[in-house]
Image 1 (tube, rainbow, N blue to C red):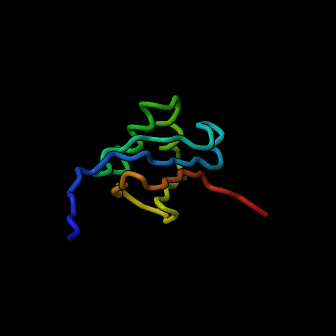
Image 2: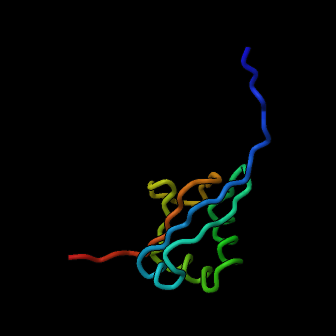
Image 3: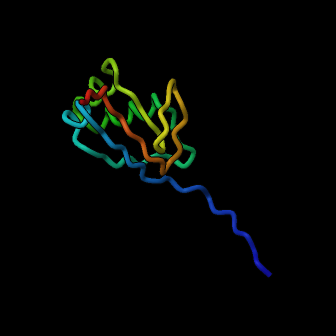
Length: 94
C-alpha cells in the first residue's frame, strides 16, 4: 500500500535574469529565495532592491519589462517560488 505524505511547502530559489541595460547595471543573474507561496511582482522587485544596489531604479525605469517562465507579464502578477524571472529593457536591432 502506498501512502502519500503531505510535506509542508518548501521555499525555493528563484532565478532572476537581467538583459540589456538592466543587466549592465545589475549583472546577468541573481538567485532569490522566495517563500513557498511565492510573491507578487511588486514584492519581488522590493526583495531584489533590498539585495542589489541600484535595483529599484533599474527595475522601475521606463520601458523595463518582466517575464515569468518565458512569458511576458503585465501588472502585479504572482510569481511562484522556483520560477524563472527575467527583466529586460527595450532592445533595438538591425
